[in-house]
Image (tube, rainbow, N blue to C red; front, side, top):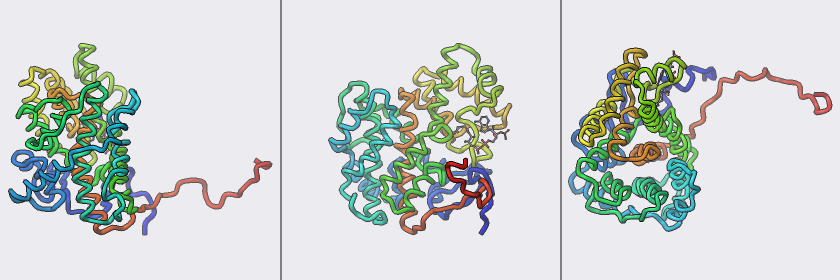
Length: 380
Ligand SMILES: CC(C)(COP(=O)(O)OP(=O)(O)OC[C@H]1O[C@@H](n2cnc3c(N)ncnc32)[C@H](O)[C@@H]1OP(=O)(O)O)[C@@H](O)C(=O)NCCC(=O)NCCS
């Protein structure tokens, strides 16, 4: 077996078989369990998408109703978690708090003592984690702003509940639908860094909470989920300086050989199909809310980067202006990515554990040759 490095960053390496997510990076195709992302974004809901990811089929009406009821039944947090959110230092970011709180959720999980490979228990934990992650993100934002903690509403969708718990009032149908679509688009993406991290941890037969905590750590970075926040911070800076967006990006990024967040992708060599929907949403929400400047600025930057670098916008570029049009704070963007991606992470962890083998690759050793002569301390 070869122990030489094939590609840096495992580019193009197939690491395992999976039946969850199909990507064709040349044709810009993304499908969950064979269902095209465009159909899911146009016709499905986040709950139906979760069902599809976890049960490998679309639900019947009754199955979907049961699924929604089960998710609603798990929409509560132990007092210990609420305390943890309240006691986080003022400097803690929502993503740090989410990573820490998800790790702590295992203290209170009724199935915590069951073996990691228990399929049914893992499905129950997936329901809990999906409901709890959304609550943690929303509640922490209210706690840090000194606001009360509203109760969930069983009649609302998962997206609707998130907005209710975040804003303390029922969302408009437009906002609920927009977030629902964003959650569908972010739900899974094959062996991206956070999902791979989750699978590596799961493959040691550690519990699902450990796997999801690993995933959250990986998602945080600006080369992965953190990119959506970086995009918006760049747009805010451009706006504050009042300059031309294209000149700003040319001077502050391209001339300095710095990567522009929200562009490029390891797998897509054409438009990221998720970006197609998010661009439209950013446009529609921007214009309907009267905050179209973020969309307009984004469009100018996108055209420039397409032209200059032949790079396409990825999922993170237009999610930034979309979330801003929904009135969401920048440091919640990456946690909201997790509110959705928990569905894909859970599906992958369960798939890994259902047919597990430890993931343990080799390194191409390039250190000092063997053997080195050991020199005692006095002789160095
Ligand atoms: C996504 C990403 C990490 C993929 O990285 P990768 O597959 O390792 O690609 P590389 O970093 O090797 O980039 C290949 C080339 O494109 C350039 N490039 C890639 N993304 C770029 C970007 N966002 N801005 C400017 N140039 C970029 C690189 O500089 C490199 O050029 P070179 O060959 O002249 O050195 C990378 O495109 C990136 O950092 N994008 C910005 C962060 C981001 O949006 N992440 C979210 C991904 S969904």
